[in-house]
Length: 240
Length: 218
Image (cartoon, rainbow over all chains, first blue to last red; front, side, top):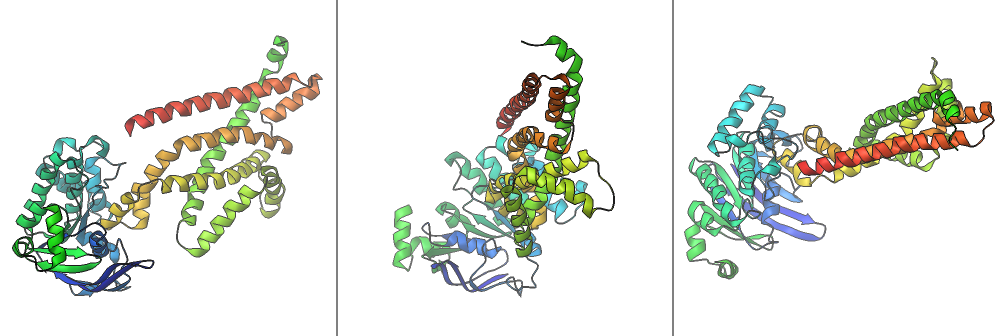
């Protein structure tokens, strides 16, 4: 579904990503782990062009998204993203946060966008918060709304950029549960996280990145029980 | 010291003058805001030519005296236009052009104050720059700069006194007139000062109130 070919990203002189090659299949849940500064978030952000890759290519359903003719806004509609800091629109209610893009980008009629949003809110158990502003929600609630907002665009894949890192510990599980459900439904997911239990349980593949390269890319059983690379071993030893 | 008879006889001069001053300042800040938003959006448009033009506009207006701008508009605009504009209109145009440059910078600061995650979230949902500006960034930026816009209004109330030099009957002009017709060179100025102060002080208190209640909802 997404093929990443020789992807490089430089910030000035700094090589953040060095020749990344991998591909993401439909329905696959890929978890990216690695020390901070290893380039994993930058990699994720390149996938929907929040960062412009320096060179290399990203192929989505057979077409290069770096091609000048590619309609990036249309592409982004198909790739949902969930941020560490939630980034809910502060000036919009919960319901409006979810309906804004379907109405303004996809031009859905208000009733239809509303129905989609209410279904999603029911699903995440926050339909009673529909008219609240984001500042009235807890972190876990914010992140669930952010996931609902992304889902309302009916994306083909979802990117999660450390979705639980800014949460209080007791709120982590409500977000992870929702992500687990999505994975079970067959959503294609690329998740940057430090939640190793999630990686172990849900991921089809775990990618370990360090210093801008993919050090190891394997099924979770292998990564967690029998990592080949000493850097992977070191990292896991530190955090497990 | 306070001359009751003077006040009862001539209060209408101050009242009328206050009306004019308030109108010029209010229209100045309203039109200035509209134009300021446009200038600001051009400046951050990432289109070179627009950036240059809007930056030049802001720099020139901020770098020249309001009095000079008033003269240029007052004497220059009628030469350029095939129809006539009233004094009042010309004065207001000069004031709002001047204020638009300051407001453009206020709004730019407001936009910059919005967390970049807001724009990224909008982008990630497929929203264009235009959509994210309109529905996400500008409403929040505007809310943040509302107090600064209020202060700009206060500034205009004071600075607009300059339009008296082209014969617009604002507080300043009327105070001067009274000095002439009553042969009292001093007291009309004190009354004028008092009226300016009442207007600006009330407004600044009101803005403080609004600011306070906005903080609560954040």
